[in-house]
Length: 397
Image 1 (tube, rainbow, N blue to C red):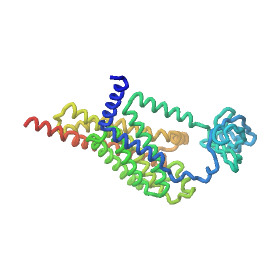
Image 2 (image 1 turned 45 degrees about the horizontal axis):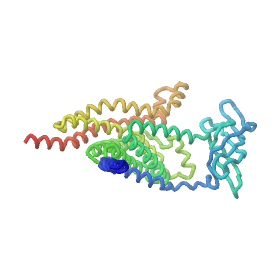
Image 3 (image 1 turned 180 degrees about the horizontal axis):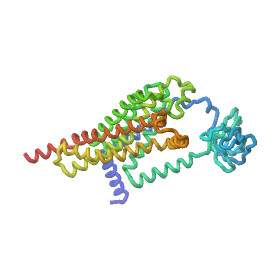
Image 4 (image 1 turned 30 degrees about the vertical axis):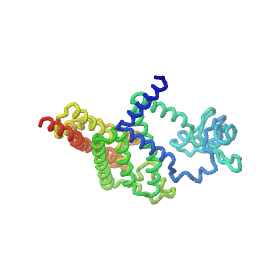
């Protein structure tokens, strides 16, 4: 046979194998969802502050700090920069730009000659009116970092890595294109977030398992764990009297024309959103382990499989809850240093609302992990042994 014909036959065989895979249609659904979300507008693209303006990189040629007032730790005033615009309709144009310093170390930035900056070029009638320095240009380096991560994931996990990338991208797009606009529009944050998390859980686990009993066992266990986290989050946020304004930058939304937002409900939603990834991870670990046990011992009873799942869950819960604790506390290490430097008593520190909010985040999220372990063990034991037990009984008869 001609080589071209053999190659065609092999390609067709490969396509048939892929189409018979349990994860083929979930991958197709994920790709369709990604395409729709990429096209879908958020409804907030037309901000007045960015109309008649280009957002492009620029090369800093020289700087002038004569209007910058240095008080030691912070700087205020205007840094004048002469820049060459590197993109957009004014690419190649050299012009002056302004970098405003407000005395905030977290927000202010200082440029030097040779730096690449991200600038907003306002224009009218084909002429530049003002150029504002927003920050150092990082998009290229961020793209390299993301590309290295995706490449490593593909090299190590191959097909599973590809599905992981699809779920990763779909999660980002759903958060940005669906969740955030829905919250800004005033929809109930708890119900919207809960629906999104449940949909993401189903999509991600279907990409892992396909449509089978392992998927049903893992998704039911994870969903129950997320529901427990949502209920406990709402209850303890109310009992602790925590206002949603404890979230960073949330209060500024109220002053920006979104005074109708219920920040406390958004805070509750953030609790089960933040722990849902760990909940899914634990449900997959337990379901996969129980499945392997059932495969190795086909005649195992549901009660024995559930007991195996419980044992696996007990071993996994310790490290997973600690992971959650470290993930949350890592973002508040500077605040803990301030408390220690000021000699704040431990009881006052624990009673402080920002610390109480993190306690709710961590402990309620850990509740979800502790509950998802036995729940997934039960669903896996019941669903994965049902047909096996019947086949064994039929063979014995």
